[in-house]
Length: 299
Image 1 (tube, rainbow, N blue to C red):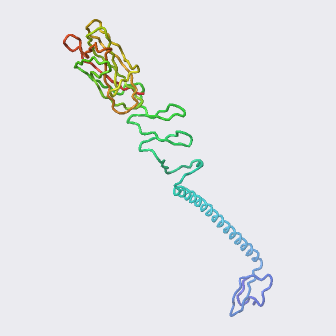
Image 2 (cartoon, one colour):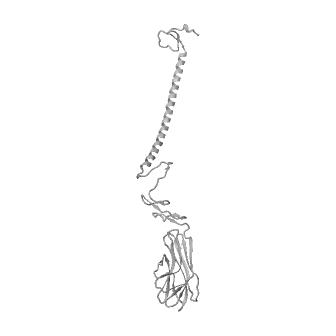
Image 3 (tube, rainbow, N blue to C red):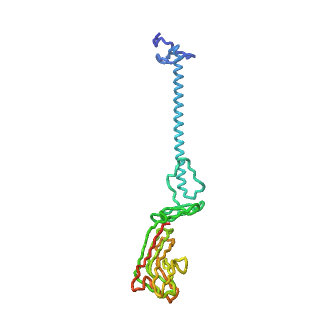
């Protein structure tokens, strides 16, 4: 049943059970609308609205927590970045191991003091780093095994790396009893300090007396390199009072250098009573060309 506003009861005092809405009829006169059975439904709706409000508040709080978690993660990243910056600024000696979690990495290199461009650092002893000087073009890094320093080596051990030859067409007379340089010389520059040099030579010696001997050797930079201080290769005897003796011998030298080396031949007699003619056959002509060959052998 509907009522006119003028028919509503004026509110003199509010009593328990009175509900709004309130209608302002005129002036300060208020009248209550008696909603009867609808009162409970209004209450339920109001309670539901309150629950919804509480749920919205909880969701808002959850979002705040999520934001806080993201902020904490960002703070952690900032702390890590700050730690790296502090490490960079410190520039001093670090002690103890640096431990990284799985998947983490250093994004910038740390320079080692000492060494030169192209040098290779290696551990020469516990807590001690040494630099191996740069090798030459084509060399590879090799190791001699546990607790041994690395070295440079030319790949293909035992291979011939270079060959140098000298030919001598003149003759030379000597009766010296000390080694005297004669014949051809050549220069070779090893590519590695571990390389060996194979020397070979062939020539003819003419003796004017069969009662004496002549000795032959190779020289490196003018010094006899024979392991025997008296001779190397052969001792030459004339077959008769006068005659020629073919000479051919070889030697493997280990110069242990990468600087240029000059190799040559030297001879001496057992007595000044013997005159030896280098590269002569005794018949008034050259016997043949005297040759000297040096082969560099890879380590």
